[in-house]
Length: 118
Length: 112
Image 1 (cartoon, each protein chain N blue to C red):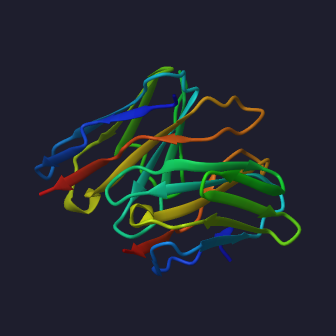
Image 2: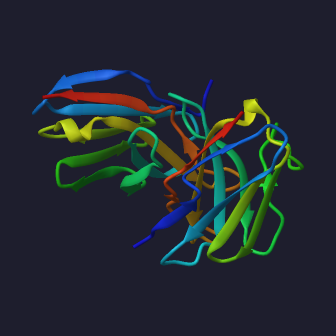
Image 3: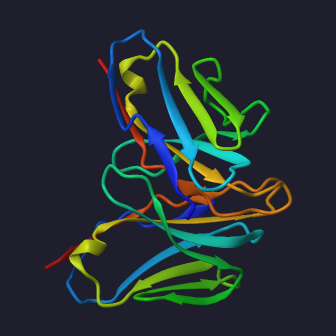
């Protein structure tokens, strides 16, 4: 159980275009989804936290107008990188949790999406 | 000072060795402690989950939490080349929001 999928797994795009990444919880309802960014040989950097049906909470330094997050259902969240530039090239990983607001629960990670902006 | 400190390694051991991976932390509010394994270009996968202090064993893996010292460990017995990966510790608690904080990850190489 607790499987999270991401699509696409790998994407190459031209500078200035937008890219959408999907994150799905396949066998549980995810009240909270997280989006991370990871540079080579570095740890996970939390970008934003999203709860189903409400606006995402972005971490300091993350541009909410550039990284659009939508969490429209309990099984799907999307991250759209708008007007992508080469410096946005990175490994983007989502995770999902079934926790409520009163306690924490484990995060289950997707396999990641490698974005390369030319 | 980072909330969670983890030596990035790399750590190289021969096959069959006992591996000890560690993290220290500064926030005494942390109550939930996790270890994740991440293979290259893959998402992290949960290995161990522990609440509060104590030990937890699962096959070749043992997680230890010492809240008095703010120190957690992951032991891998009879290490195998397939254990070669990056191991991330993570922790959370009622720190004014249940945000999970990750360590930097330790890269482990198990040589055949």
